[in-house]
Image 1 (tube, rainbow, N blue to C red):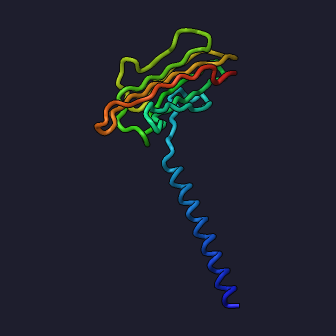
Image 2 (cartoon, helix red, strand yellow):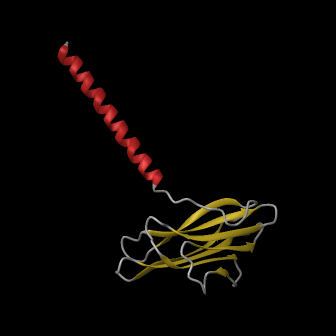
Image 3 (tube, one colour):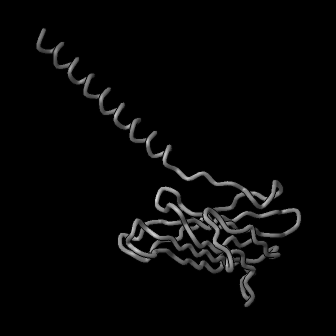
Length: 158
């Protein structure tokens, strides 16, 4: 009887330890998550974020292209932002957007040294897809210049 009670207590303690470890891991991940700020305006709803990865292995996500949409006027909006958990001191960020099928990009940041985000930039594309562009350059602890560029075509259709 004593052996069975000891086994049950040990099993219960192990289950509590596993559950606690899982919750600690979950909360640590949430604390590291990047916060998104809507610089497009209160009438714009968040659609989705697309990753900008560094060209060096292991290809970390160094930034994001956030897309927003205003259903009342048909405009899409883009913000390019640095991923602060990977990048400190970004020195060049560019955001771009265009209606799919057109050739002209609406850009912000091409002649600037933004340190946390570029944009907002807008494109009128009701009932159409958009193409988005994000570029982020930074210096990493004396190891030289790093960064990433991302172009996504035919996204946020509607």
